Picture 1 (tube, rainbow over the protein chains, first blue to last red):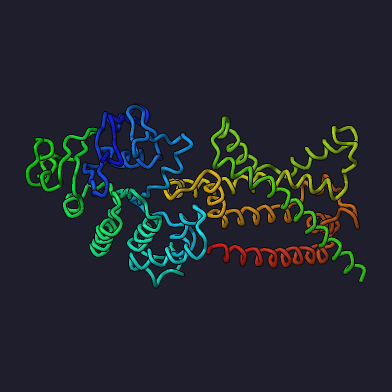
Picture 2: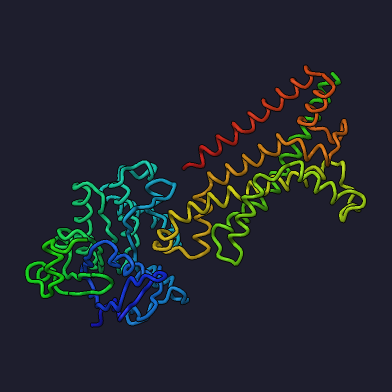
Length: 244
Length: 216
């Protein structure tokens, strides 16, 4: 069985600054794949490339064997098979219900289906009682749970999480991590999580990759990465010897 | 009694001219502002700078420009719009449109910055994103219309030059105040001023209520 996402020698630069320098990885169906690395290593860029928000300068990303290209006519349909949760949740000026329903409305789902799925998603993240409240009046943690419900309600094949618990309190971090594990367990969806939080990667990821200075230096099962890293850079990063 | 009738006529014309120019200015300015904010095109920065520059376009200059256009020797003289309410609307459209355009562009740009990637990541296509951006910027758009109307109803220079302040035909509240003050009829001038303030207050109160509802 081929991997749903294959990243082949991808390079990306912003102006003069090379952010990714030949990144390659295969992300397997149903796994939680963690991308670790210090700030500025290029982790978010990988996610934005996978979600067709950017195009690579060189190399390619295959999604079920088809090369992703944000300018292609298939880009919208491909992007609609994925969902991404950003680091800072941006909510629409609307109720919690409407925020979660947004993606379904874009896809032309009928009212009864929208209602049923939105309430199910809100229950999943523990926000059923807040459905009629204004989303922007909720706390940061609650807004991030809205973002999770907004993505989960679409039943994506691939869930992309970009530092999705950064700046949240421990209770919300735990709630969102549990929601992620439960969602993967119930749907079998593939999850790619970007984080600089080693403990989070340890708690969530099946496999992990360390991205340093635009290059993947080591990709291995998470247990191996944390307990028996093969590369000196990985050891230095995990032990905190690497200042960043 | 005669003053009452004249006052009503002046109030009616003031709101007709300001309202019509705000409507036309909004029909032009909102799509233009949205285009400046959302569409990549050559010269976008220039158009944006131009819109912001025209924010402070002196009304007297707009009046002079329209006067020259509509005067008998001017390129649009054959329309015979000089010293008519239509001519006054044309002058005010010139003043209102940049305000609506600039504020719309700012409001939509701030939405663009905050929500563009989120909307795309949730599956919006180009058309859906543009509709979402305008909907999200609705409070800003209402502000643009309110400020445009505020500028139009309180404006005096352009309507005086283009309308000529003709009694019973092109006299509006602001030009009436100027006239009465120049003739030392301070009581009448004050009455017109109070009416202008009171009626404007009612219009803005209604718009503000609509704006409050637009928050959700």
